[in-house]
Amino acid sequence: MVDLTLAMRPHARIGLDTAVFIYLIDTASPFSAIAADMFQQLNQQSMTGITSVLTLTELLVKPLQRGRRGLAARYEALVRSIPG
Image 1 (cartoon, helix red, strand yellow):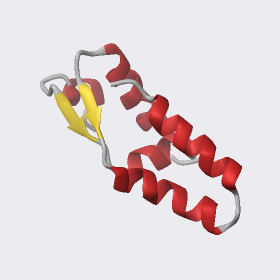
Image 2: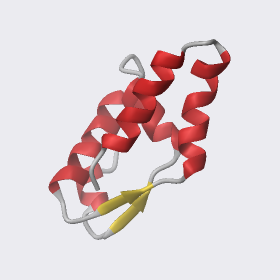
Image 3: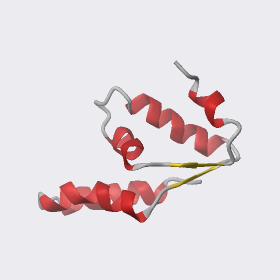
Image 4: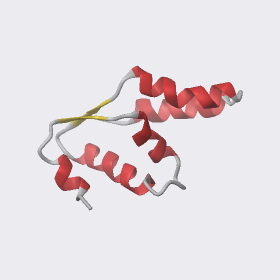
């Protein structure tokens, strides 16, 4: 398996798709720890992570469809609070 820290090191900017945020939120996912590590690396290194408004939209669709506005607000706050 590739060491995530080593793989990220040569890059100044990385793109983050919706799945990475879902893995960060869903702590039961087998990829949750890897996603958390990736965001930790973003915070510690001189690189930036970018995503699109589409990612935020995709994260909010299910909670809003189910009438869970509070959950949607927490997801949005999480995404907006991530530095880098």
